[in-house]
Length: 231
Ligand code: ADP
Ligand code: ADP
Image 1 (tube, rainbow, N blue to C red):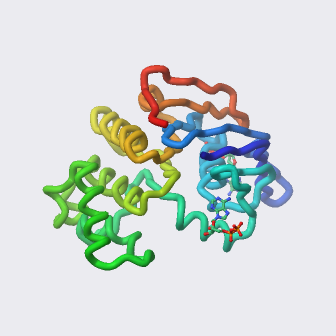
Image 2: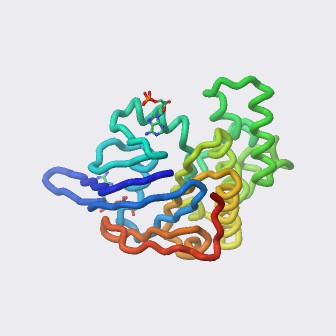
């Protein structure tokens, strides 16, 4: 589904250059949940931004479904809208909107009528187990529930790839485990690919595969045998 090769990226500030990514490659399959692991400064955010088509200034190549990704901003924006969803550490929900409205929000840009949007929201709300909470506002929910709203919002457009940046960092262990399992199981169920950046080693055994980043290199790829992948 997603393939990247020889990805390099440097940042230059004044006359200091940092090589954040020094030639990384991976091939990620449809429905696979991959965690991107590594200490602070290892290049996780840089790689996530590139895979999330938020940054076109890098060397190397990316393919989505065997089509090369161009490096023009407008083309990236278009592909991002059609194919990608995002989940953040701090949930990034809109506080004045209900759970329903937050999840519906990405659909407003698509050509769907009210009933079609309602059907999509109801379907995903059931999948994330929030049907009793749809009229609440984010501040009436626990952290784990807010992150489930954010997962529903990321998935409601049925993206092929979801990029998650430290999605469990603000959650206690049982809640973090539940959120990780939910993402992996929804990925299996809907065929969605997840790339999850984390420095939380508790999370990595709940993914299909772990890419370990250190100092701008992928140093290790671990296949997690027990987490079955569909397709
Ligand atoms: P991680 O997400 O694993 O903490 P990053 O991708 O944020 O790693 O950073 C990788 C390296 O690139 C670090 O050395 C960091 O200081 C540097 N870096 C990241 N963003 C910038 C930036 N905008 N300008 C300069 N250096 C940066
Ligand atoms: P074509 O290459 O068939 O002329 P376009 O480049 O005009 O197609 O894109 C057609 C649609 O496919 C657009 O909506 C665009 O967002 C999407 N698209 C283009 N390149 C890619 C890609 N590498 N991966 C995923 N979708 C893409």
